[in-house]
Image (cartoon, rainbow, N blue to C red; front, side):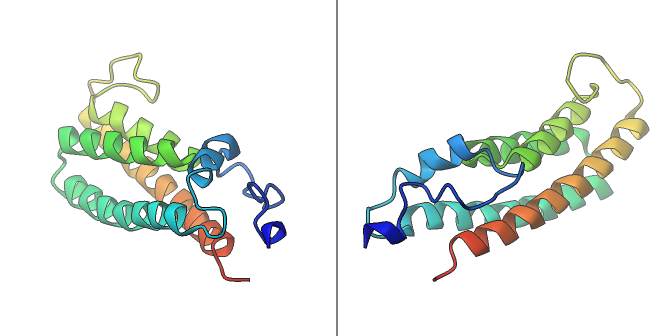
Length: 144
C-alpha cells in the first residue's frame, strides 16, 4: 500500500520545469493514502493560469502595461508556490516589463512598444512552459 505512495515519488522526472523541493512541500500536505489535496491545488492553479493567460491576451490588445504587470505578478506568485519555475520566471519578466523595467526589474525601459513586444514574447514562453507543466501534472496524477 505505502509503496505505491513513495514519500514524494522522487523517481518522477519533472526535468527543470518543476522545483522538486517546493512541489514536495505541497505533496507533504496530502493524506497518506491519496493525493487529492495536492491534486486539487495543482489543477486549480492550472485552471487559474488558463484564465489569467486569457486576461493577459486582452490586456495586450489594450496595451495595458499596468494590468499586464499585475497579472504577471499574480501568476508569478501562484506558480512559485507550486514550484513551476519556468512559468514563474516568465511571469516575473511580464511583471517587470509592465512596470517599464528590464527583465530583472533593475533598469528602466521607457519604450512602451519595446515593453509590449517583450511581454508578448514572455507570454508565449509562459504559455509553452504552462503546457509542459500541464502535461507533467496530468501524468503525475494519472491513476496507475
